[in-house]
Length: 398
Image (cartoon, rainbow, N blue to C red; front, side, top):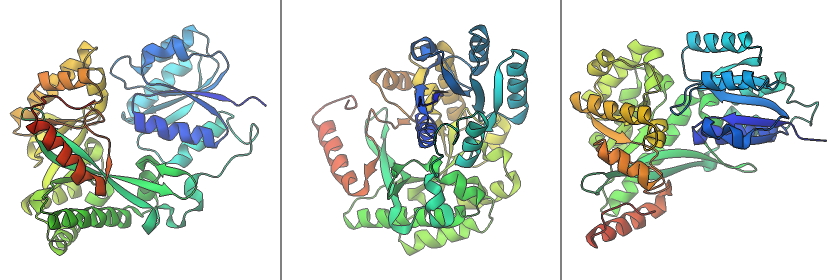
């Protein structure tokens, strides 16, 4: 029997990979379009479902809805976005008005079960192929086991001096049957099931333990750790973190906590309480995925952030799209006006490197510099980078 075909239109590679895995697990054949301009290349008349992100720098999803209506598309449409509910509701109404087969919408971040439910509603279900259990279903407490939790480290580079500055700790799940899974497979589920604090504690302990091991090798590495807004809502978290860094003999100044911009819409009073106390204790604070959330200049100015990370979607399109380039430049200017260091994430090509350098970003990270590295490989990578710099090379390795 023919496998149902699903088109994923989203410029976030991690989320696209996550949705691709869920579709495949349900017996579907997933196609990915990371730039809506490529729609003609991947289009098929026999599509069963379209997963559409409505916020993309190169072409917004509302334009895609218009194109689908012009093609008299009968596939089920699922809207995916981090936008607020008013925008999602408006997009759904617009799809109805254009006589598209709108199935529903998913607000980022979402748990796998919600995606599965909408795909099943769109008839991508056991009637086509026996529904496989989701990888999370067979795991106790719905989070990785102790030996399955993997922390990798991605380097960051100073764009002006080319010096190594720090690493970001990136968590993965080494699933016994599904392989290495991205955070989208377990972080939202851990938040919803109330397991996020326990998981965050394990991630922090694993990261600090590695920092301590590097210190024993005379290598002091500043490290960024991603923190859930659910964890920040617990006002006891700053004290717990202070106890942990003391235990591992790490200075709070070595640790930067990355918080996604959407925290402003979730328990802002307790989050502000935690963030202020963390800053007072000497931890550095970074606002992550800037440009995709709900912040304002007044809010940014009253929160003790020390750095701003520009979302990869603007970096990706900056070399070829004037609007994305202007957003990049204005974000850098805003960050500098607020005395914040500005970091470009997701730099993958020489053209993107040139764009973020021209925009006067302070630092960058991404595959163009290095993929996330196992902890044991990080010192060797750093030695090679420094040797390359001493040899007089002035650009990042391909």
